[in-house]
Length: 77
Image (spheres, rainbow, N blue to C red):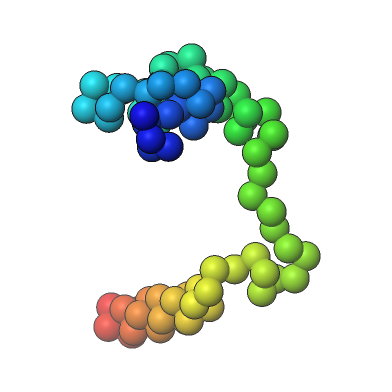
């Protein structure tokens, strides 16, 4: 059994994706344990204090492009 054949929660054997509705977990139980950790705040995505640390690379350019398209739409209508 390789690394990819184990449950990401309990590290036990995991059925293949086609036979396992709880994939990438081995069971619904492990899936719910992981969900509980997310909902309970045990897992967090860190956010920096600086605004540039919070945005994704290129997000300012994407926002500017979307605003430009929206402005063009307003001029047309």
